Image (cartoon, rainbow, N blue to C red):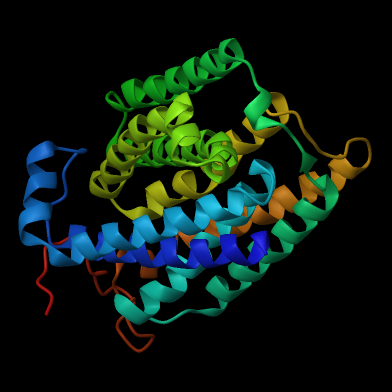
Length: 304
């Protein structure tokens, strides 16, 4: 049930990302997030609001999956959001999946299966982690995100966009980490939920992660930011799951299988992230002149 829930959440999240990207495409490219841009989107972009509503639905499904499985398992499965995003981009933004994209989807799927079978995550007690350990883990994660954002200010546009994607992916992984103990409090009623400090931390973390995602979407093309958005999420979650929540994974020779799965997964994600479908434009037909200029996917355009 947890696997079905998280795959459904990944599909819904993919839809939300496509809607947000389509809304952002009608705006000029900016070096990063701005509050004025956010206010404009809220007031004048119903498609953007639809994307946000979709992401909220994904959050509910995601939280339900986390209540039934380990953080490591759920967040590894979340990477399937990228293939769903690509398929939905074809339907909503236009274009056609080529053999390379289908091969990359196959690589990601196979890699994920191998990785999960090799690691076989189980156990863990997020609700039993002490406050000091929590604060240390949060401080290290937030410091890493801050360092990436600071470094990106002096980087070129492509690197800056890639780093923005990594920061956004880390923020998404941190949401899952904080949600895990909150789901344990839900069955005990509203009073238990309100008395759990992670409930209030979740509000702050979710708001910050949302700003990081908008920053990544507005910083440049998804071809640069999407690998970080996709892969940084499970990296943060697995580290927290194993090191902080004490979730158990296989060691020894199983790690070789896990490494193989991780390579297949990362390779497929990198190939998919280079797909023109993520930027919402069609590549030139095969019969066009070889030297024909490629359309700029980030040029402002109007949609019906």
